[in-house]
Image (cartoon, rainbow, N blue to C red; front, side):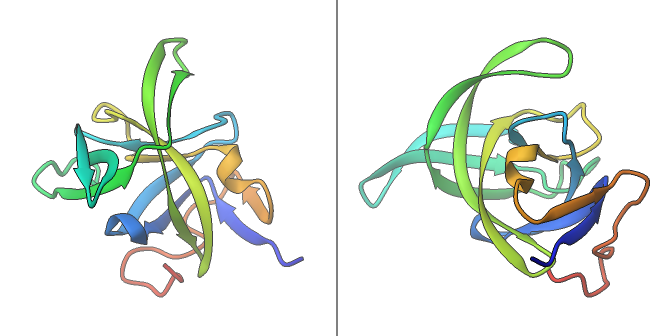
Length: 148
């Protein structure tokens, strides 16, 4: 099995959500992954119940907005690193990492005060990922060919 080697932060893609590049913090201490959402509204598209979601994909940039629809997978209680419990919506989508596509679940929460709009927890990286915690952007930076 060939492993994908990544650093503690990487640029990834969520192509099914229309997010071509988003900076992710790799967090093995977190079980679930979390995506910043500044707006979440119940919606129905083609008979499917789900959510209309607004995301600011770039940190410190609220002028850039991406909106998309995603079916609702679940609602779960999540405890953040500060010990606060919050009930969050859960969606499923495709993560593109170094040209490899995998299906992951994302909880939705407001991460305006956080440095990263996307946190990748360990369930998103269970199989063929090797993390080098002392390195960053091993898959490339914006403007470089990084497979996403």
